Length: 366
Image (cartoon, rainbow, N blue to C red):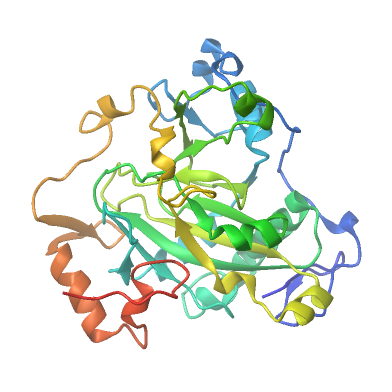
């Protein structure tokens, strides 16, 4: 779905041929302060005074673009931090299914997701939810304008997925598209993450060393950087960002929304006959040597292991608490629900949806 903003009256339409008239119609709290390498020297000990969510020192809170450590991180990862309105967040939270349709197909099996249809924008996803239409529409317009402004592009499509974490098992380093897609279209693709509850969302990020750093012959592991995305904020990153989730702190499993964004150029689309948002697919292996996992080089942040149980929630029992995101909770067997989800097909979804976001590989259900 194309984002269409008219500087006199912002609207959202599904016509892929319509474009924004001018970048002057953009307004956003986004920041992109250039390119830099994020090292520990960028993280000032005094920045801990900017923490408002009591996170451990090794976690960077993305609460304000005025914080030097947030600026350094956005600079290093070429990221953007934008605001998301409360009416939009509440409507999406109320739309979230009580049980998400499938597990992410890594070996941890602690992440649930439910990909939304490619032809639905945010308005389509939350259609039917009771809300204040005017205030919600203002939030949606501001949300889409902020994405356009951040990426400096007037014709975009996006696709979303609800996600939650069952128990904390740090997700291995990965990218969200296969390497041939990234190589050919990577500059047109972006990722975004924002929480749907006040629990916020956590993400671990890694930087691929530069060619100069690689030529130095260093084989040292590359440690991750853990960030906290507060409720009301959205982090936008390039599509080739190496990252991992799998963090849980709270009863909702840090319910969140994962966005896949594509810059659209109609001529290119017609010539290649490809819809990029049909092709997200978690890849955990190295680009030039599929025998090796990315997590062999890209390791967890120092001290992250000590937060298991002490800060992040860990469940060792077979049954885990699921939450209706409005306070009530119940206990269900996650494995049983997972197989029931496949057997009942969740309104037409096949078992091939379980393994990869790309929805292109069949999964044998035992």
